[in-house]
Amino acid sequence: MNTTIVLEQQLQKKPKGSFLLVDDDKDEHGLFKIAMDALHLDNKFISFYNGMDTLNYLKKTSDDIFVIFSDINMPKMDGLELKRMIDGLPEIKVKAIPFFFHSNAGSPAEIRAAYTLNIQGYLKKATSIDGTVESLKKIVALWTDCIHLKDLKYN
Image 1: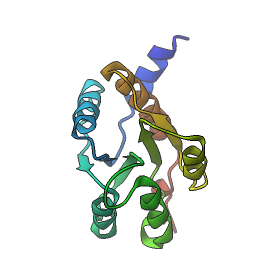
Image 2: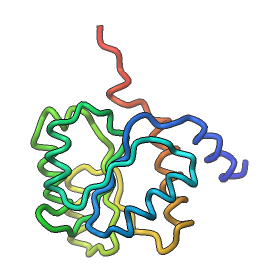
Image 3: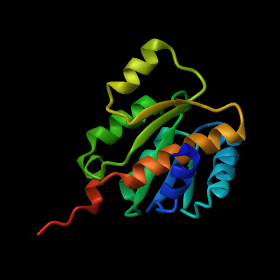
Image 4: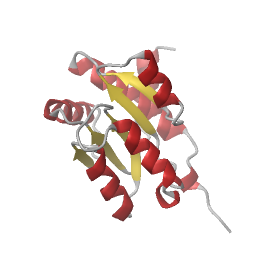
């Protein structure tokens, strides 16, 4: 079966929750929003430019979060520290929000450090909007098909 057709069929299953992008590069926020629009994703898109503001939001929000995409190198609090802080706060960690690093760089040491934090993936930023759309499409298709902790019903 043609892979593109399979992915398009899977995207008919709409993701639930907001998309968070944490990146100090304003252009990345624009590209990400274009990619969401290209995939007809009308989910809430929330932009942050550093980990500290993201963490503060996560501490106080009751919003359902579908996924977090984070750059690593940012001011105030980098992406690695953000993920460490999320994992250290039970009220956020229990939400089991899929967390992906989305970065231009990536030394072997940085990538190893990222994966020790139990992330769902480390993506190199695409060099074109088509690449961004394709990466987002694959991730959304996968995570809308997964059984998520928040979908479990407790008796």
